[in-house]
Image (cartoon, rainbow, N blue to C red; front, side, top):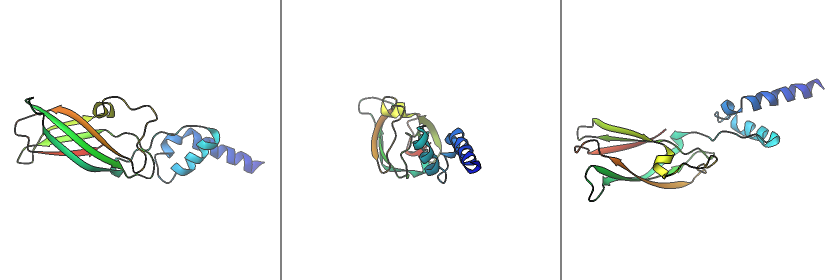
Length: 147
């Protein structure tokens, strides 16, 4: 009986702190198993370092001065499905000085907010396209980062 109560207490602790514990790769499988039993939900996995940029292109929008058209594709290389990332685009001049940075939410680069439980499956690749205002005519380079 005592062992059963200790087990129940352990389960309650896991469920109560599931959001924090599920963010740790060592604990996530245990927390997911516990949630399967008691039918609770887990927050989406977040591992920006496991997102791989496959292709990117930044070019002036034809016929529109000062606007850049951006296309990129990336893949989720994490073990689990993960939430849509925030994309950081940095534009630099020929000397490597950053002249503009913008962080885009999933809603901004997808054109609409993803559904609450919409995630990127492991191995899933996606292509996105969006436009930004060019910060200066001296823009010569760009970089992407995931947040």
